[in-house]
Image (cartoon, rainbow, N blue to C red; front, side, top):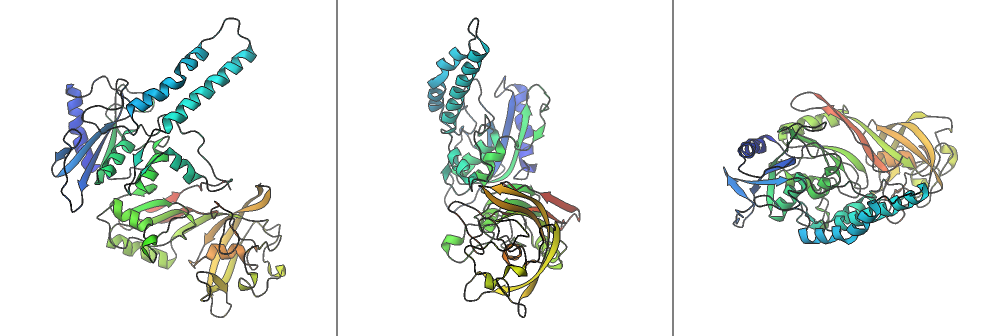
Length: 469
C-alpha cells in the first residue's frame, strides 16, 4: 500500500527508537515490524496525555506499536494496545486447540482416504478458530465509530458478481499501522506522519532497520475502512483515492449529505484547502479521483480537466448484449432518443469499438435525469471498446471500456442506455435502468492520467473494479 501519511517527521523519532533498541533499553528478542505514528491534538478541549503510551515530543504526540505478539502477549508497556482482548483471544484459541492437536497426530497405518478426512476436519476446526478470533477485533475509525471485520465483509458484498472476502489473511489487524491509527482515532488525535520499519534477522522480504509502507496482503483490507479512504497516492500537493460506490464525491445539500470524499480528505489532512475537488464521480460510480491539497495544485489540475487533457477510462457491465437492441425495464426510452424504436440502435453485433456523440440536457421536471435534446442538448462524446459478452446470474451481459472525451453529466450512463447508444443500461443503474436490492452500479473509473501540477511529471494510475467484468 502507498503510505497514507508523510513519513518525514515519524522517521526522525523512529531513528531515536532504533537507537534505543540497539542499546537493549526496550523490547528485546523481537523480530517483526515496528511502527511510529506522530499525531496532533486538534480540538477545543484540553488533551490529557496518557504517559504510559503517549510520548510528548516537540509539541507532537508520538505513538509506538509492534506487529503481532511479543512473547505470546498482545500488549506491552509503552506500546499502543492490540485490536482484540488478550483473555478473549486465549479462550478462542483453547476452544478447538485439543482437537486440532489430536488431528495433527498421524495414526499408524493410516490410509489415504483416512488422511484426507483427518486433514479436512483439522482445516475445518482451524478455520472455526480463526473466524472466532476475527470476531474479537474492534477498531476505531476516522469518524470515531468502532467497527469490526464483519463490517469489512459486508462492504464488499455489492451483489453476486462482487469479489467477496471469504477468509481474511492470517494476521489481518495485527500490523503496527492499524493498531496505531485505531488508537489515535479513539483518542481524537490527528495523524500527520507514519512509518514502519523491520527489526530482526534479514529475510527474502525484509531488511533489518529498513522502512516499509503498510502491507498489501493484510493492511489493504483494514486501513481503507479505518481511514475512510483508500489512498492510491499522496504527496504535499495532491492525493489520488479509490472512491467506493455509494459515497458522494462532494458535499450535497442537507446535513445527511455532508459525508463525502471531500469531507474525509479534509478531516484526514487538516491543512488541505477548503475546496480540494477538481472533478467528480457520480455517487454510485466507484474508482479513481484526484484532489488538490493546495490552491496552486487545484488551479493546474482544473485547467487540465477543462482543456480535456486528462486521460480517463471506465469499466462498465451492461445489462444485455450490445448490438441486439433495447433492454429497458424502468426507463422511459422516449426521453433518451427521438423514438424508442430499436432501429435507432447505432451498434451492430459484430462491432467491437466505436464512438458516440449524443446531445443531452437536464430534465428539469425530473432531476437529476438527463434527456435527449438535439437542439438545446450538449454533445457528450464517448469512445468505447467491447471487452466480452458473458453470463452473470444467468443473464447475458456485456463488459465495455468507456473513454469519455467530454465530461457531461451521466454521459456514460446515457451512452449505455440511449437507443442511439447501446440501448441497454448499465447493471444496477437506478436512473436509466433497474437496480435490485443490495446491487450497486457496475461502473468504475479504472484509469486516470494527468500532469503533476508541481513536478510536471506524467502521473498514471490504474485500479481494477471490485466487481467481475
